[in-house]
Amino acid sequence: MTLKLGIYLNSQAPETDDPAAHLRAIIDQVKAAERLGFDSIWAGEHHLTPGFHFLPQLTLLSHLAAYSGDMDLGTNLVLLPLHRPVDIAEQVALIDIACGGRFILTVGQGYRPEEFAAMGSPFEDRLARFVDGIDIIRRLWSEREVDHDGGWYSLEKATVLPGPLQPGGPPIWIGATTDRAIKRAGRIGDAFMATPNADNTEIARQFSVFDEARADAGIDAAPDKGRMLEVHCHANSDEARSRARPHLLTKYAAYASWGLTGSAGDAAKSAEDADGTDAFTSLAHDRFVIGNPDEVVAGLVEQHRDVGLTHLAMRVSWPGSDPTHALECIEIMGSEVLPQVRAELS
Image (cartoon, rainbow, N blue to C red; front, side, top):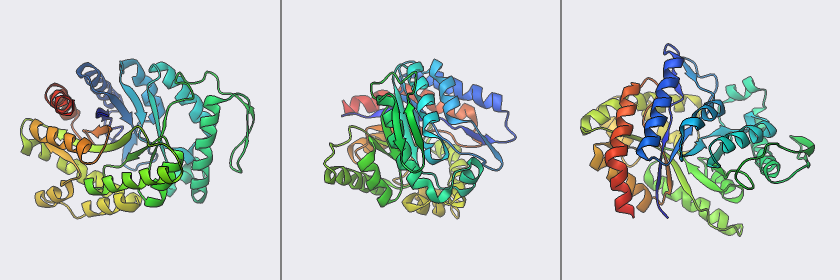
């Protein structure tokens, strides 16, 4: 078991930014990641983020499939209760075809009531819709003429055509932050995708919770263990931290204001008062991987050896970041970091 290294694309930008320029910058990053041998690209989902625009996730990934080469494409994550399962099954099936059968569908419940209100989905029903939705999507990818009446969605002889390229459909990974949700992920998901918010010790503990839930349910161990990870690399360590610090503090304060829960929410809350260099260093310790190439190599190797991860979605830029900094980071990592990590873990 080895470590795959992917790039999580920053879909969010200040509303004053040119969205066309933002999209071009993302395409440039994907092209660079493909050329440099990264393993995957990922995109996320949110709606109605005041002061920012957020590029729609599946539309973006479908556009980027043409530039993705042999890389995996993944969602991190689809807020499943906001959507109709048939729609997600159809869209993901087509993107899976477009990317050559390398799609990973990561889903989560969501936690922002305003998103649910805007999408016409009752917030209090999100868990039932989430579980029902996963069941429907799996069946639509593996069966024809599906009948289903789970109380939330009703289907009669439903068939998704075209179906996905991967037999039975892409793997469904689940993102969660509370123990109860992580245990559920172990029972109904193909893998667990951890957040970047908690520190390494907590992430390792969460995977133990996930593994134990699978074992208790008589399910084989998951082949993959994923995590979104905040990463930034520059030849100069101080410059790497200087570039990442203001944007990460703003991002994590936003998570706290949005009501993120669990250990991830606790970490986000700590960012609200972390306005200085020392406070940021404390927040970043054992949580982010930021520094020069040698420091980043050591941090990524630790994610595999000590935390047990097999696939990282590395977020190298954030809302308001200079896109040239993200591209520089990807270039340095592709030319200096990836070869060292792979050699050390081979």
